[in-house]
Length: 539
Image: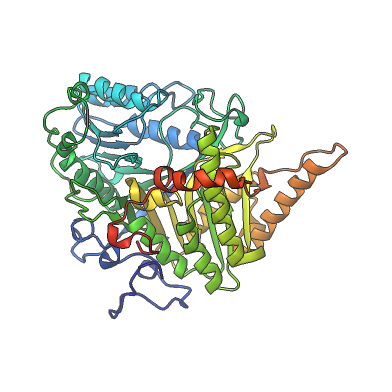
């Protein structure tokens, strides 16, 4: 059962057969999170492990996300507080048509009298020259303008801080406090929209088969309400431990870029007032490492545990979009749900090709992804549909989003992929959402319909035949079949609408498999669980 204990207490959860159950049915309890060292679940009087009364809005693709981010940062004034955690941040990356960049907006906030505290990942060792050095340059620029940024190296070897979030607190206007959580980085190639013509600012390392201006599909989440305070708490836990990053193998030159001690954070504000009808639970990954994280001494794997719990309640449809659906140990959680529920359907949308076209990336991705797909299809047969995306120009669309929707009840958007690295090795932050309205499915269904409408190439509002998830799954299958047949046809005809293509299982030779399997397990998709859990389906 993948290591998630049943909650035996009265009121600890309703039966899986209750279709109208609320957050307590879907979310982890504090005990199920299995990280007593964190205060994340102990700060509310009722000691609930999630917050209620939130507004949650999906931001689909980079253009929408960046426009909302620019608008919020443009409304920062003296005394306001900004907290940023970034995997990669390019300070001069244009976020909108006007050319506003994150570095410029943060500098303007500092000039206005706001505070800016930021954590940027810095690896132990890297040979990359395209993105990672931008973090160092961003830190230097922010410090010169009076901000408080840090390079955070408290990761395992070949691991990273992959969390991507930004919090704005406005002490005089708490009803406008906001958090952005998800998978979109302020980097080249991310500013695309549902037309998928690509970002003119191109990431140099993307495989040439995506074209000279690669199309990019992604997802993020805007949150208002008490959950904003939860996101800020995750930042404060990491910040309080950031001084320990100096224990890592960071060079003397790089140490000069960071202060001896992290700057003090501003006084903590009360949680923002209620703003909507969504319950939000933050799910995280931290590896088990030494020196230990004081807020997660055995690591935390609530991303994995939260997903596994939701899958146990799945009855009709699981829909996922994911950059790296390639870990057999993760695919097994979905396969178990398919075996348990004979009517359950699974739809997965994945990239057609790896982001990078190197020999190692292609081989390791092919080996692991192929095995994961085999597990899913063996469990679900024709109830499993796997697609990738293609632009109207006939080029693949790179899919970077990390989304999961279960039965139009539980939805998750975040930084964590469906691989062992994201479930156990890197740091991750995902927001799971359950609507509190009667029926509980408004947010999850709206998110699914928004994504499906885009993938079908439809105008806003054309979703009536998609409302029922199973009937909608048949619509998607038909659209992908039509586009596949159009490509196979000998005679020219108008291209069918939409972006969905049937996804082919990657082929890997036995010789390649012999070396790619161990490389994939050790380097590309490592295991950061405590030793007692390794080699087992427990999180």
